[in-house]
Image 1 (cartoon, rainbow, N blue to C red):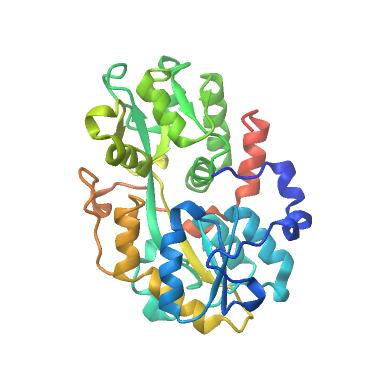
Image 2: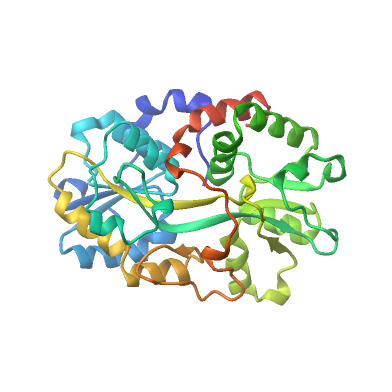
Amino acid sequence: MRRPSVRRLTALFAAALLIPAVAGCGVDEDDAGLVIYSGRNEKLVKPLLDELEKAVGTTVAVRYGESAELAAQIQEEGAKTKAGLFFSQDAGALGALSTKGLLEKLPQESLDKVDPAFRGGAGDWVGTSGRVRVLAYNPGQVTKVPDSVHDLVKPEWKGKIGYVPTNASFQAFVTGMRVLEGDDAARAWLGGLKANEPKVYDNNLKVLEGVGKGEVSLGLVNHYYWYEQVAEKGEAKVKSKIHFLPGGDPGALVNVAGVGLVKGGSQTPAAQKAVDFLLSEKAQKYFADDTKEYPLAAGVTSTVKNLPPLASLDAPKIDLGKLESLQETLKMLQDAGMV
């Protein structure tokens, strides 16, 4: 999902009220018992949110948009917001609201359903599903896949890399590199990548297609796009492969989609029921089976063929709440001439 440029971010607060309201479950926001601001794509989660409406026992309206924009809108609306629940595509937008004190603390019982690594340090948001950054590669062009994103700035990869600089997950990964290694290291890496003339794509699926066609040898993507392609076409017809990076490399970031209760409304009881539903076995199986993400609660594990268990991944150790410094990342990408 595309995120806003730095220039757009400066106007987000003014533009926030222009984001159209969408009654995703068939009711207007003013008539709903619970209003969800969802940074997750409607096509991806609408079937699940229809089930959520039954589970919480009240009418639900859903406003879809980009996570960063919806978080900015909640900040702009303040106490007047209609949102009772924020369903974010990434941890950074939840961290931004947590930093501003706009989320309610969740019951410990809900928090304890998810590993501490995948929930907010202040106890006011919790991850609902996880995704991993990986390298996609063309086995006909790559004999030794790099084990670190730092290798991608070497001359041997010039003109051979595909990526999506406007993609939220790519930007979250860069933010993670800033948190883990510092701004100077992240800036130097971006400069090296830019010097290697990577090919820009519109989205992660097109990166995968480009890798499969041999347009580029490597691509920076999230894991589930590849598994979705395999489920759709069959592995024999998918020409790319993916590589999970070892050693706590910043390129192996595990980010989460998650939820938080928006502070100050009368919807808190219904929003809490919604959180519990999203952490339930039914919802967690939806993430595992339908979106090919990693379930994070209810003891559910993915049954997707050849998907490494979450516990086996050698992801970097990072406080996901610190991914909220998106504006600094966007400024860095803009300075590097990437967005």
